[in-house]
Image 1: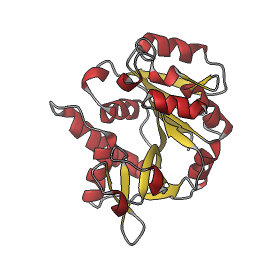
Image 2: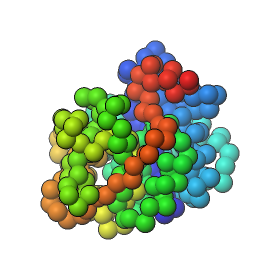
Image 3: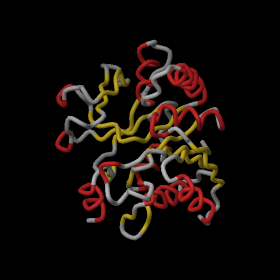
Image 4: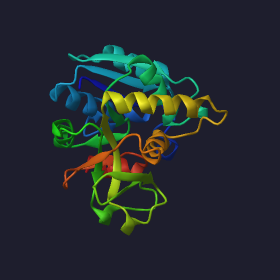
Length: 238
């Protein structure tokens, strides 16, 4: 797997005023931008190509990408209607550019490099990274449910904590066959007038159709954080 997709189009309203004129992924954690943390991990893990979906403050993010020095081949794709769409549309735009197998990262994710290494070393085709620590779960968490065969059956914030395996952290890898199936679903979803779907909705549709199976890799206590609020950012810096 040589292509990673980073979704970084959205406006981080809960991080205001820090994100008033700055894309969330360009906020800093311990002196490095959130985006740089991911890019360095990807490069260290042997990823060659990265697609970053931009949107809010596109020019600033494009400039940052242009001036970022590494061995990575980085392509920026702009979701110009980020205000009226969610990440299903952003992922569709990336897959329009580079169909096939891919690694996916949410643009507000800060994580221990070992998490990424473990995901890439997992020989399964379709693997979602899940934190099984129920102590850190809350109602807003995207929770993963599994069946007795250890396959993921649902991604939903509405699932009761005790009924879930844990929290899907916003990192996954998909094989080429499932990637192509997901792209068709995303094309259908985003052709509708309402473009406010999430890519997790697409995964749930594939699961419901029983056309593709999804497994998981646990974070096993390794550190990660989704930077949604100022408290999240402060905690990550600590």
